[in-house]
Length: 298
Image 1 (cartoon, rainbow, N blue to C red):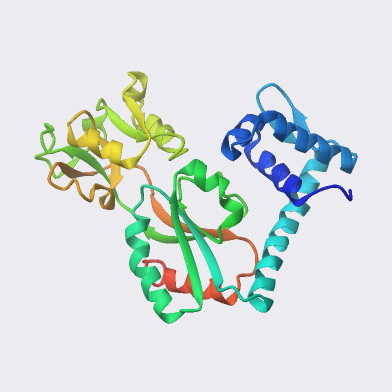
Image 2 (cartoon, one colour; image 1 turned 90 degrees about the vertical axis):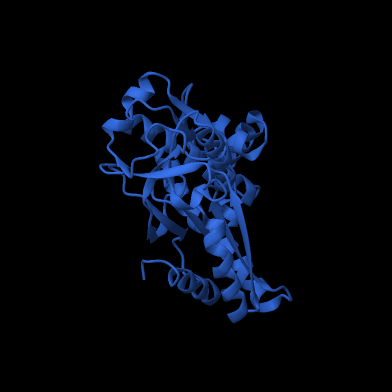
């Protein structure tokens, strides 16, 4: 046990969350044999098998479940202790790290929020970055707060979730589209449209929800994955298809894209903030309170 490292423990936690060695290697940009080697060394040092393996996925053994619960708390405590020590005894400025999922307008939301917070708390540095879903998943252990939406929660289990704002989704269409003169449409009206959806790197749920909502389009291969919101908007603007988006996403495309209300869209969509289930520092609590004051959930 004396030879077990924090890096091996974090690797174990990552594999337990992803349930796939290949996926972990891709997300961490290391070889699959390296992931396997680290897990095998950890199991050897513990004298226990942590995973049941098959050709497609892995799952935790009973011992693995036990260590996952204990190691998760231990790693959080480790990072917490390090941050607290630096705050109390180091000369570094207090830093809070925020990551936000690309494509939901958080860059616009947080620009003014962070500016006013920094004016009130000049001793606290807030680092803020936009990531695609794969990048955000890789950065979880380094982030204090995560901004995402309620449809993308699989990768942040065991987190506190706070709703920030209800978001209406619209049908984004070209102003040359045959429906552009309408103020609202039904699900039936758009059932056979070609939809541009975000790829799995940016949204684990986008294509799945689109397939559920528009089975005819899915059956006819009319759900087209693209790598980012800009690609979505360009294809819509060129009248190659349509997309489900929030109002903030068409900034810069207002001259070419028209938003149409969907009368019977069965999706409840929210912006959320997530953070690990631990006691927040006074600085983190101050930031969370400041952020929540800008949204509709108080």
